[in-house]
Image 1 (tube, rainbow, N blue to C red):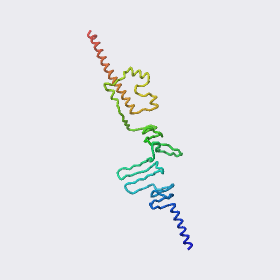
Image 2: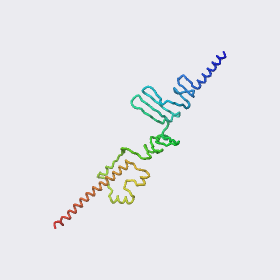
Image 3: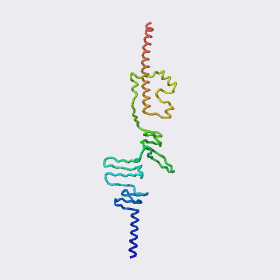
Image 4: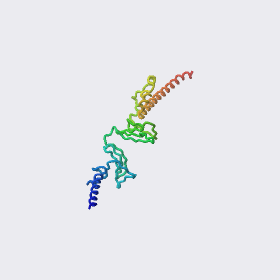
Length: 236
């Protein structure tokens, strides 16, 4: 009888402890370290997974990692149709924060490889990109396409005011560079916009072409005048 009572007391204690540690509420959720699980498995604390795969059968699957404050979500989503997507998203207010891709070295130091700001700007080798893509280093590409407008074909219109060469010379002597183009100091400080610089260079080429055409016409006129002057001399 004593043994039976002892066994009942022991089982009751174990059952009570199990309910506090691993509660099974009516919802069917399992909690480890929590008495109010909000998912099928809710672990309050750290845990280790030795397997490499987390699988879900079926056509559609989602695997998400969400921080407790709801500020960052890292996951994978597979839809029932074509295509899959990996994603890292900010659930909280963006704009000031961002995401970093960091390399940890063997000596314990770290190096930021790429940074994506909350406003959509991306920096490679720079932590505070002010443009959609800022690279602190060299870029190599097969082709770069720059979209622009107001292409300087207006130089060839009849109402375009072409600066005389003598005025261009005065400007160069005074400023040390061509009109409309930035100085070397400005370029060193601010850099150049490829689209804008290409437009300016083309404008100068077109202006130079007009000057060459005018000079060629002037040469033809002078040649004709010289021929007229030489004719009486030849007759004599």
